[in-house]
Length: 393
Image 1 (cartoon, rainbow, N blue to C red):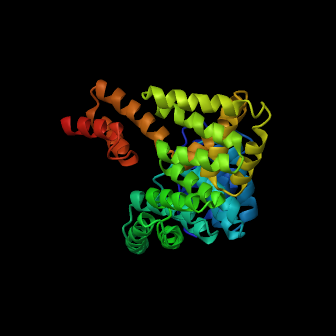
Image 2: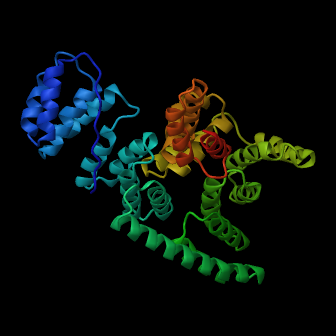
């Protein structure tokens, strides 16, 4: 498994000479001497960075048990932007513990999404688990952020380009079948399209539509939920999901889906009032404890590293019981960072760039504006604003 190496600048008041000597030993490949020096500093002034350095020495020496212990110690002191996560993922992968490998790499991705190695590790690990939606999701991230356009990049891009063509070809065949109301053939075409292009919104939507037409609500639910994960502002998907949940007798899920529709139809008074009426009718069919089943589903999805569906269910818990907001806030933020950390990073970088720009530090402001453009989507307001500011420098 590919691994990244990190250099952590330490500005603490530890014994600088020992730190410098240890760093020099490490860089020259004398990991035992570096380890001895780092260990001698443990009682003087412990920090997450020191534990990380100790762990890296053990890691380089092949002592993965001690490496794991010290990486975990590092994370206990700093659970946020900590490079220890990627090494813990590597160690878990070596032990064939794919579930924990994915979890740790997702933690690394949450704070450094442009680490192409982490993206590639996540993509290949999900692929080995048969989780194609997640696998392609991270392959696409890898292609976006890859700095080395070498053999790995070329192979992944070629494969995804081929899969995209095949997926689109079969989707077009499926659309013809749907126009003829031949849903069985449509499902066959779309299933093949999905195998090649699982993160495509239209394919997931059409599969949900075809299965719903065939009264196969369970399969319709799966693909419509994935379509929602791709585009959370699609009223069409949410309306179809509401029908599916009602057909399945899952009135709490239908209620939550309608609650998601409300802010999307607020400008349409008639549709808003109709949605509110159904919400009131469904609200009488459950109580404050009805969230519990969704909590269990969320926990199960979380354990399976299906972070998109886990987030969906945890959000349902809050929609059903306001008191769950505080209890699930950290978990929801973590899952949001696992799936779309760019949202947090773009906001932080934009604020930093604006501040530097106002101070007249154009050179450094440009660096952050460029990062905003890297992490945001070209059609987003943040991207357009950053591009305009860079162009004006």
